[in-house]
Length: 420
Image (cartoon, rainbow, N blue to C red; front, side, top):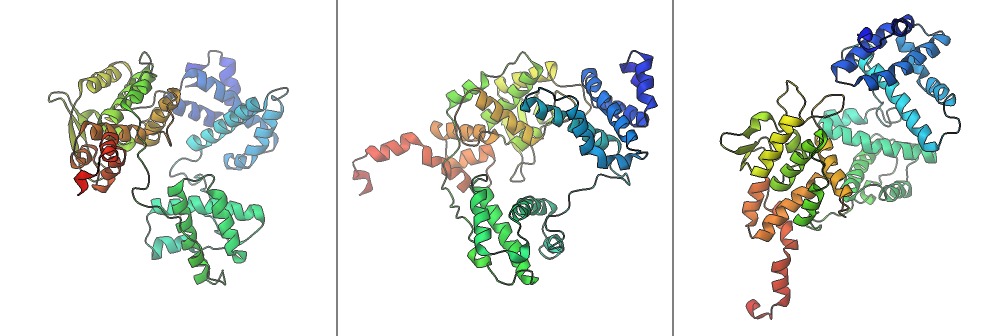
C-alpha cells in the first residue's frame, strides 16, 4: 500500500524501519479504504513517523505504552515548529497533530473487539457516588440515551464543583442555585429544564444514600416552560429563496446541499428524516416521495415536486459518490460515510448565516417552520398542515396560529360587533 503512494523506495523503507511501521501501513490502508486523498495521507504519515521516533526515544516498545506519551509528544512537536506563529496558527497545529494521533489509535489500536479497546470516560462522581448510574439503569429503568444525558449534565456539574473545591457531601442550596444560575448563560430554556430535573434526581439519591444530610430537593426549582409560550422560528418564503441563492450548484457539495434544503423547505422534513432517505424512497415512475419512520411512527407519501426531483437527479448524476449503500445523502470529503442528521441541520444553519438571515437557533427546523407558516398563510387548516408535516398532535400545529398576521389584523381592526 505504501508503494502506491510514495514514489521513492527510501521513503517507504524509512517508514517501515520505525517500530510503528506495520501499524502505520495498516493506518494508510484504512485511510485509502475511506477515500482519503493522497494529499491528506502525505500530511499524516510524517507525524506518525515522528511519534514513533519520540516514543522509541522514551524506551517504549509496546503500542499500548505509547498512549501515555500523547501530550508530551504534542508539546515537543509544537515547541519545534511554533516560533513566531500566531496563537490561531498554534491552535490549528495542535488540533491537527492531536487529531492525527488519536485517529491513528482509533483505527489501528482502539478497534472494536480489541482487548486494548479505547477506555471510555469514567462516569461523573464515580468515586464519590459510585452507585448512581446503576440506580438509574436498574431501579429507574432508564434507557442508555437518557443515561447519556445524565452523564453530560452531571459532568458539567462535577467540573464546576472541582473548580470551586467542593464535594457532594458539602453541597448546599446556595451552591446548587449558583451553579444553575451560571449555566443559564450557556444553556437554552429546554436545556435548563433538563439540567434542573437531573440535579433533583441526583440530589434525591445523595440524600437517600446519606451522602447529603439535608434534603434540599424541594428547594431546587425547575424553570417553568409553558406550552405555546414561544413563537415559531419561521422565516418568510422570500428569505428561504435568498438562502437557496447562496448555494453554489456548480460544485458537488452545492448540488447535495441544494437538494437537502429543498426537501426541508418544500416538505418541512426534519433533519433526521432527510438523513434517512434512501434511493428507494424516490418513486420516479409515480412521481412520489416516501418518508418512512417519522417521529409519529408513521410514513408519509408526497407528490414529487419538479424542482425537488430535478435537484435530486442533478445530485445523483453529478454529486453522489459511487457507494453500495442505498442511503441518499453522503459526505463528500473523507471519511466516506452517510450524512448524519446533525450534519443536515448544520447545512441549513450554514446557508442561513451566509444569507445574513437573522433567526433564533438557525437550523433544519427553521425551514420546517417556514414551510408550515407558508401553508398557514395560504389558508390550509391546521389539521391538514399537521398531517402534511407529520405532527403527532394538533397542539404542535396550533402555535402557528399565533403568527397568522392577516387573521390577527382583522381581529385587531374589528369594531367588536361580531363578538356580541
